Image 1 (cartoon, rainbow, N blue to C red):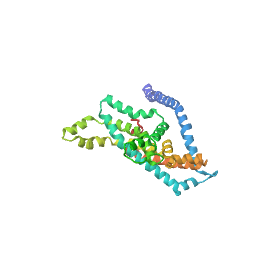
Image 2 (cartoon, rainbow, N blue to C red; image 1 turned 90 degrees about the horizontal axis):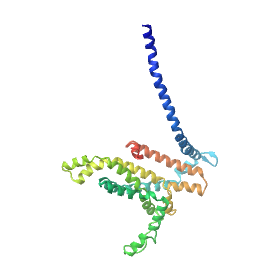
Image 3 (spheres, helix red, strand yellow; image 1 turned 120 degrees about the vertical axis):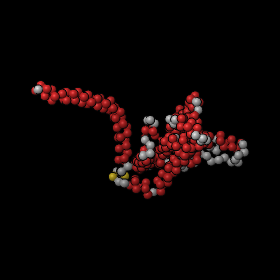
Image 4 (spheres, rainbow, N blue to C red; image 1 turned 90 degrees about the vertical axis):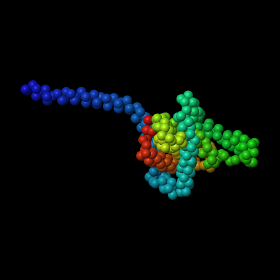
Length: 300
């Protein structure tokens, strides 16, 4: 009886301790494996971001909200952010109008042809953004291929102004960001069960009716993911607006650059960057209430 009581008393301890030690050892090993990545993130992301935020609160060497006051009171900042958001919205909508048919075609084509379509979409990734921007600059300039072709065919009497303005910036930006719209759309469309489309057709629905009532609603998560990616990337675009805008189309990223290069004002540049970062985080938060961030970032 006494031996039984002793065994009952120590049995749970002997059965729990090995498991707890195993979990502690496993957690310690996971932390050890994660430490290099955590260190890299801390040094390359957290530290610079903290420094950036700190700089935005310094004006002429003292703590101040002067930079933020200028952002919210001076017209140049309001006009720059308004232009940035307007161009981003236009680029996002144009990328959607162009990218949706491409992704839809790739999703219904045989595998071989679908891979060819996707390869043509991804092909620009193999070329530098700077090279692509210069290519569009050559194509769209007053003596470029497009204007010469239109003049030669008699469509226009004088060259069109297609560069060094907002139009040229939008054209080149749509081309560069189009893959970021097509790929999320294609990934979503690939997961739509074809049986649902066949069921809609068997119930008497026309191809257009089946597309509008079945396929389109099921692809909306990909639409939202692609629009979010393109919009956020366009907010921070620098090289393309700088070249195609010719200094006339000033977006937020260019404002940051000019505050540093022309005025050596790191505080003002940091304040613009922080406001832009807050806008991006707000967009991600709103979108995350509708779909998971994993779908936007391509994790799932």
